[in-house]
Image (cartoon, rainbow, N blue to C red):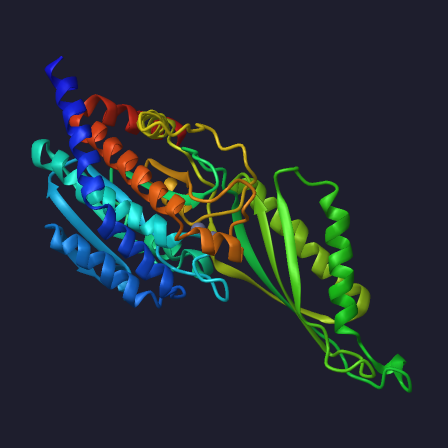
Length: 393
Ligand SMILES: [Zn+2]
Ligand SMILES: [Zn+2]
């Protein structure tokens, strides 16, 4: 009985700590918002976030995994090691239209408050700063370089339009395509030409046909990045970028072969030569740890914020999926913008520094910090988290 009273007291204390830091966290989120930096160039954001952690007694290592804007900050001793994941990169053109200025600040605010739990119980709170989520899947590189191997749980909260403890995220891989043909006068000697643009158009048509016969959760989409130079010249080169997504790793592999056959078929039909390259980074699907998700939901609901356990929305992909394959993890969402506001839109970028966003920041930081309290205070709950993870492997 005494144990649960301690936990409640600690939760009240971490909430007060975040309320006391509201101004500072809001400034942090605003500075990052007003200075948007693209993937692997987040020098200012990484400096601000690590400075705040250092001021609060965290031991900081910068430039981990040979990535200058990645970092690891730790507080406490021994096991378990609970990681809070921070993202802070922006998008080209639309700045913080994914709200990573809020998301990164949530993990920092939560970590600083959760120190109170690490002062009382064995265990370590670690913030892992993970650059370049948007454009280069930074966490997939950090997974390969061992950044997450010694962790017992990893959690983060993304900006969104509803409060949700879990994320549906698809496995996905990018495909880069080029066709090489033969240039010729499009009217005088068309019979001498090999049309690389036609090969690309046929590929789109073949993919559209394929789409009727794939699992409804899978996605194939792409753009043409080169379709020729002049309308009176048979295009001798075309290029496109494509993304193939699926709910399971195995199905993604199956679908990748079928998609590639669409390009091969178009090459055979037109006589153009196909060159292709699959991106080295491959996003894994998100494996939600439901024990963590339930703790998160209860803690967020205790703040009077109604929270969904399952995510019923559509699915993109996130490099947090790769982390969730090796560590029990959640990638939750906190509402910072009105329903219907689209991620990656200028409207979302504007919302990412509103009062609603700062309220969301503080509530999500409180929720994460309270969840850390649950995990450090109760070896039984921690064991449950791990048991579920092992069962899912
Ligand atoms: Zn995004
Ligand atoms: Zn994002």
